[in-house]
Length: 149
Image 1: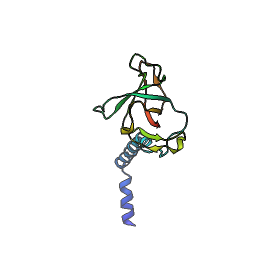
Image 2: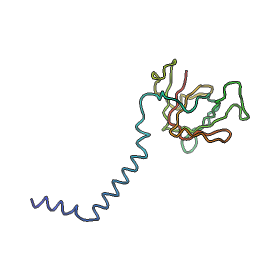
Image 3: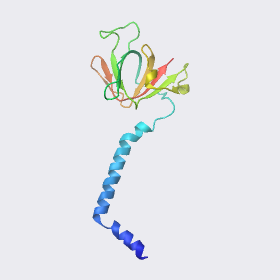
């Protein structure tokens, strides 16, 4: 009985409660920020993609660990002023890559960034779906890429 009241007495100090509240808010904020990226589905997304394109260029990995892909969304006949690149995307280790064989999206298998090659046709999803209207365009926050084979 004496031991229990002694333990509860420590939790009645405002300093302890303030530290507990700050720790909970910090952990909750970090979880809300990073958890969606880590909770990726094992299946490829098969809903409407934001972009279907052919990879024209792949830049080397930058110091930040991201790679820029130059895409042609207009088709093979339209080459544009940047050698066929009309949209750029930035991909990093958090982007989920899938390889689809045939026409069934649900059969797509997990891949990696090293599976991306020039002249591959890809479907791309982003969390916001916002494409900046510069030239070449820029698709923000890419989450998933399905390589069509």
